[in-house]
Length: 473
Image (cartoon, rainbow, N blue to C red):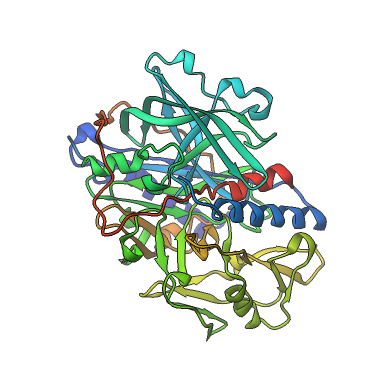
């Protein structure tokens, strides 16, 4: 290890320690803590297996977006885990009395919280499942729950219990306890999904944990934020790696530079975290985009890549010499010469945000091949669903902020401290649940925030673009 790399490592460690000690906390009785993000390395794959993996990513995203469905303030932070070479990012929460920790994917593309039940048995093996009988505060609400994700599915019942995350506690959070899933649907150590979109998208109808905190004034600032690490194409990456930071109630100023550029949700729709794409440039050339809702994009931490309409994706690759549409398992994807550094920039009405060429290159077809496949792919569009899904391929390049009031999404440039975490191997962050939680009980009449137009009830679960791929690759 060089002196420079040692110094960078020390600065990164120092920044993390300073966050624990010096993060804005409001009243100390409700101070938040770290929410670790983790990532797990992908298994080795041959060319045909990569094609199947790509197909499953695309199929699951299509399924996710193709149909309609129906006190004291504080701050909290949690380091995440980066799983599967940037395929998904998860953190830890606790459920029940006494509290038991579970690793869940943090997904701004869905709104339901669900955890695998101890009765899920072999289909959820090795995930440390939830045993409701061991919680003295669990209540069965006698309501069914069922969600389909591409070729996968999850089903069970809806319950209510104490849920803790990042130093916050809700004593009567509604969530689903899943008793049946597709075989190997959950990959150890993941136990479930933690939806971070708006209540109007929840299959269960329950108000999401984050929205309950924000609407009841539990946060110092009405926002949550992500910084995601990059380990894609890192041959030295381990099975699980540090995944970055997820904060509730404040933005971590050490992880970004400049100001956060906020853009409101189009038409005030509080459903998906929507943004309108106003421009895309590829290799310095702009592509044509439709106006209005045809250019709406869901900002989705639970989706691995970037999906868009066929015409838009074709226009992107038309600017890359030597690109070709994929066939078979690669349908919807495009190949291009690996020695081409692809420069893509996206704007949502403000600054142009760059996608690193390292993130644009999804995979190559072999160690000696010059054929790579891009991380932007085409998917069919349907009425009422976003035309674009902006996943982790883009989000690893910015500090992203999701604001409750006014409803908006913000982006900022990553700081040197944040950039130094990319590819930085380290120990997996431990759970940070804490006993100094801000606690409250939801009122039975608790309602979503006032918004300028009614939201369209649509289903999502973008994270499963990742999980399904692991199952079926």
